[in-house]
Amino acid sequence: MIIQLHQIEVLSKKDMEMIDITPEMDRLVDASGAKQGIVFVTTAHTTSSIVVTEGVECLERDIPAHLERLAPKNPPDGTYGYYHNRLLDFDGRLGYNAADHLKSLLGGIQTFFPIEDGKVVRGGRQRVYFVEWDGPLARTVFIQIIGQT
Amino acid sequence: MIIQLHQIEVLSKKDMEMIDITPEMDRLVDASGAKQGIVFVTTAHTTSSIVVTEGVECLERDIPAHLERLAPKNPPDGTYGYYHNRLLDFDGRLGYNAADHLKSLLGGIQTFFPIEDGKVVRGGRQRVYFVEWDGPLARTVFIQIIGQT
Amino acid sequence: MIIQLHQIEVLSKKDMEMIDITPEMDRLVDASGAKQGIVFVTTAHTTSSIVVTEGVECLERDIPAHLERLAPKNPPDGTYGYYHNRLLDFDGRLGYNAADHLKSLLGGIQTFFPIEDGKVVRGGRQRVYFVEWDGPLARTVFIQIIGQT
Picture: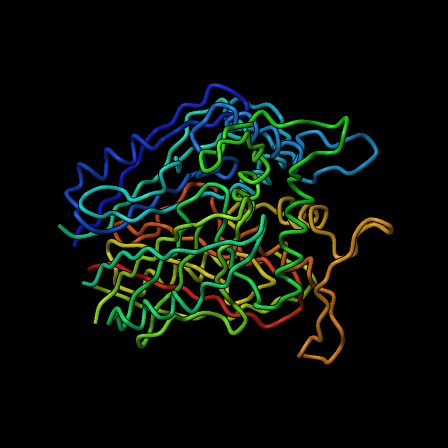
């Protein structure tokens, strides 16, 4: 039984950003020697998501734009506010990132796909994205492979 | 160690539709010979979801209706638009299905349940649904069983 | 190969409530003897969620408050209604909990984390919460451990 845990680093460059990590996932599965099994992908952070969607640039714009509609960083005046304001440890400034935690919840934080004949099995249009909701930051993603040769 | 990967076909007949696939999941687990383990269910498509909820007709109406409120196919005039418009390959017409990708993201694309004593373990009200957001279409769902006899 | 299935009981005391179940998950993994593997956490109920977020009191308020905005128990007058009204079996009163099923869907019902060196591997801020959307109730959470010594 193969059980391998990897960490990959993802560097976001914008406040919100979708980064396709499918190649890194596929490469780790190829290198694992697992012929059959499953690969699990999980972000290590609470203001980011792992999302599976079609790999097209227009969706990479629509998804952050719409999640910002559903959980706006700055709610419209006179509507509501968030309780969660905290000091961001990487630069000491006060952060108002409740909305980014909410986006993480709505988008989800993890996914998995089968491995068959040594390859990840996914739908023809399915790509795996790390989604930054509160960047730019250096981020970690756990990729675990369980299977057999 | 048992590792089995199955594909089932689901035929949606409407634009949005919830189809209970619990019987197919249970049947594959029964046939697998796995006494203990886990079953993973994942849609192969980016405009569909796998949702676990109570198996009642009224919720099968509420869930698509509410997801359409949260990610409307046609946003109200004067509000916002989607970037993602694409040619639908099955009939050559231009599709405006960004909202269906967003529904897929909000609803989620997969689930898993334990197997014990050869049976899927789930809550008394939990049913597993394939949810079509952009039908009617012929769809594929991956069902993977990992366990031991 | 270790495959263990546990059930833990969670008692919610409010209508909506976030209850940190990370200690129970960690304790079961410690006791399992699994050195490497994965732990799966799933609620048994269709009006609750399993959510991973930062363990701070303000977020424990923001998340229920915002999900209530996205799927309100009582939609604004003159907007829309839910189809799903049902008799609540624990007290015989009529329940209108369609919105709580919707919150369950948006928040998700399960999570998983790797096990390495006998410990659950998660990000420094990631805590696992059972989230009650329709309490107070006695609830069940499945915690399954798959791995090897």
